[in-house]
Every structure is written in structure tokens, then in C-alpha cells.
Length: 289
Image (cartoon, rainbow, N blue to C red; front, side):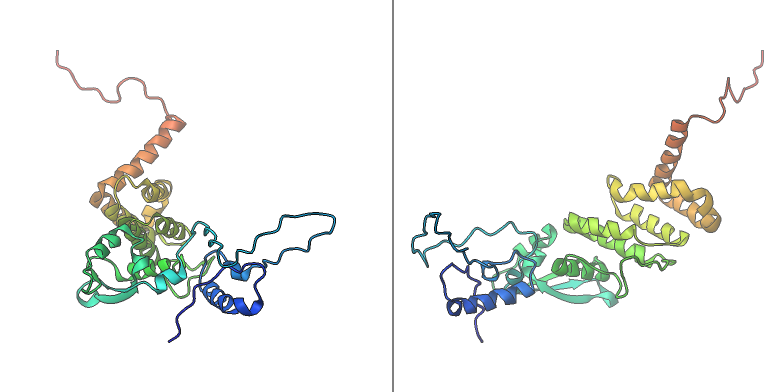
């Protein structure tokens, strides 16, 4: 099996024949990578010098030139993860248990998984067990690691207008958001949150989504909680007609949700001023003299 040749910088003055292998290697790598283009794909021919001008000539140091400093990485390096060991990840439990595999160099970008990788023995199995994680969400995480994006369905397209009546799509994005928070990947969190706001959903879907968010995120995470509370503060007078009993159950089951919604409503009334000024006591107690 031929060894993959490392892409080389094309130095001015080289013949096309001497640089052809490097060009081929670079072209192959560039077809599968988002990295900055290497020198082999750039036109390094110097312009012809005008006779009236004098330019300092470069000494003949071919082969002694140090490789250029690479640009700051904006993503993963395709060759880096291709040469990385394969890790087996067991996600879920019982009937939902699923075995996945991924390149180790991509897994260690997540601090939580990097800690597990550090515990691998030199000659032991490379295996991580995550029985409590959602299989679908973890699969989307791996898709994001390889492509820097993910899709929750095969038919997902920009501008999708189909209504999510059951709440499944909202919940899938929400699970990815909470998984990203646990793994320590804020970029994936932002992508999941942006996809949440593109979903056209029904009142029942929004109710399921609100219950999940307030049950699986910390109180300090206002990024995802505040839009939920604001939505229900603005629409509860209408939505409760469709999901009245379920809305009441949610308010009782998750007091933090009730408090956040009520706080937004009261703050708004305080800002707008009371509708009627109440003078004196609205309630008097009988006194016996």
C-alpha cells in the first residue's frame, strides 16, 4: 500500500515534473478538507522583471527553505483525523444501546470525552460507554464534528415550513443543545439554538419543549430559558385555550417556569404603569370597639 505523501511547498524555479507528486497529494487533501490551500495549488511564478528596475535576487537555497508557518486553524485537519485511532462509543442502554465509532482526534475536542480518552491504556481497548446519553443526539454530535453542521432529519432543508405538531423536532434540537453543554462545545450549542428558532411548531409542541428545557437546563442558562418564558408570557392568554390543562400541569410541576413567566408579565405591567390607581385599602377588617 502506497504511503500518503506529505504536501510540499512549491519553490519558484522547480520543474513541473519535480513537483507533480506534491501537487497530486495536495489536490487530494484539498478535496476533503476545509484547511487553507497549500502552496502546491497556488501560482508561485514570479512576474518578469522590467529591465529598468533592479530587484535583489534570492540565493539558491532550494531544499534549505523552512516550511511556511501555517495559518491559524479554523476547523479540523482532514489528515489529522484520518491518521487518528478509532474509538468505539457505546451510547444508550438496553434496547436503545448503539455502538458508534469515531476518530479519536475529533472526540478529544470535547473536554468530557477527552478525559475518557486520557484513561485509555496503551494496548487496551479504546472504548467509551455513555449509557445515559441520547443516541440520536450523540449521532448529530458526531456529524457536527465531521462536517461542522448537523441535520435531525434527512428531509431538513433551509426554510422548511412544515409544522412540528408533536414537538419531536424541537426536542431533538433541545437534546443536542443540552448534550453540547455537557460535552463543553459552545459552538454546537449555538447551532442547535439557532435551529430551534427556525422550527414552526404547535402549542402542544411548545409545551413539550418548555417542559424539557426547564427540566434539563440550569437556572443560569437564560440563553435558552428566557425565550421560552417570554413566548409563554406573550401567548399564554391565547395558548391556554388549546392546552389549558397541560399548561396548568406544567406550571405546577415546574415552579421555575411559572415564576419566570409571571415575572415577565409583572415587569411589563410595572413598566407600563397600573391600569387603575387604587387608593386606600382594598380590603378592610371589621373592628370591634
